Amino acid sequence: MHSTATRFEILSILYSLLVYFEKTYCFPSRNRILELLSTRFKRYIGLSCLDYHLGILKKYKYIVSYPNYGRLDDGTFYGKSSNRYLMGKAFHLLKQTGVTVVQYLWDWLKETRVNGQPKDKNNNLPQQDLDQRSDSGFEKISLPEIDEPP
Image (cartoon, rainbow, N blue to C red; front, top):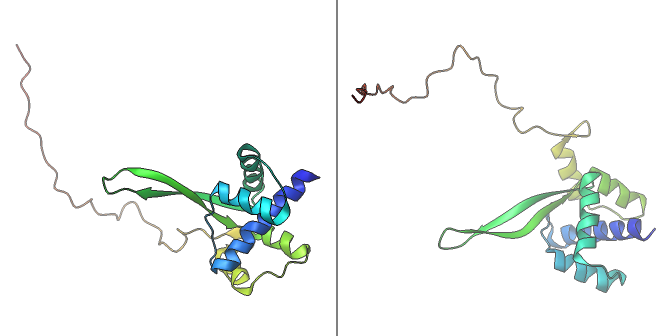
């Protein structure tokens, strides 16, 4: 029972961050989620336990995470907090438990879904006929023949 409650508490924390910042995604660090769990729900868990619960939520498609990277002045990349989106199942679960889901999130969910499935971003591209494709635009370069060594 504690595992299910913890997952619901994590969902409610992510939802409250979405509403507070008026966005469709949030990117709290894992330490920030742990801090909010301890202050709001008096739930004290470790990072590995939080990772387990986030993995379960991703596995059953309540949330989707995308890695987020930053870039330093010298060109090297570094890891930032992942972007997390709540999916339709999470909104329906929150609604069943009495949470009033904000209208802009329902609208976003309707825009990004078709018949309950995510829209394919490539659907609006025309079909390509392989016979009518032009060359890549680069000139064909013939390499000089190399004599074999004696």
